[in-house]
Length: 287
Image (cartoon, rainbow, N blue to C red; front, side, top):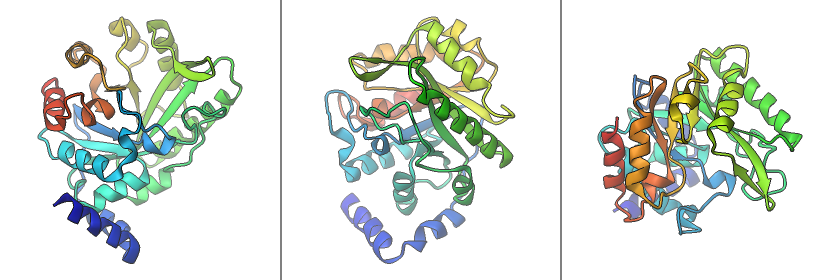
């Protein structure tokens, strides 16, 4: 049955591309509340296709979309963030009705490349987010003290924060301190590194009125989250080896005053037991 729905999406893209903007114009919108449960589906555009032990898990677009539709239909799931290709597929599938939608903005820092820290804005801009009647834009900011390209990404993020704020749209900033280890970019997930990253991200742009943070769960979260008064969402990250421990970490962090919800992708869409609905329901229960 999903194959038929997918075929209809391909047909619409082929014969009626204008149906995407038309569907966006009449879509019932969601609302950003005191708690948010969002799905993340912007990994493929950065060339990051693995999930757990499955190195090409997200390479099958039909499978990814089916998992997203299952997850978005679960009670308590507020919406999704993704790149235009994924969000437009979900629009045509009718999966975004009544949902909060966040467009992913900078995907130019392709995973595993020499230019990974030079994370250019190759996805949504604030104007496109507004035109689609979405609720905000998300950007990744990796701060590598040894890579001069960091400052270009910082500047681009600051401009995006301003452009979104001018339209009263959420600017979701995902900051890390990062280093190259054996040629690969690795995020430093220590309390001090996250305090520094959050401090930098909070100061981007001419206003922080519409800025939210997207942060990992690390040790000493109380101290980490004390670095800013901005609302924050926990990121799900990679598929955990111990899901119960991961959920426990989320639950503890959700008690902190600035933590307002969860943004999870691979950890919920590709759980070890492949029970997408069960993983999503457990995450929602934490809220």
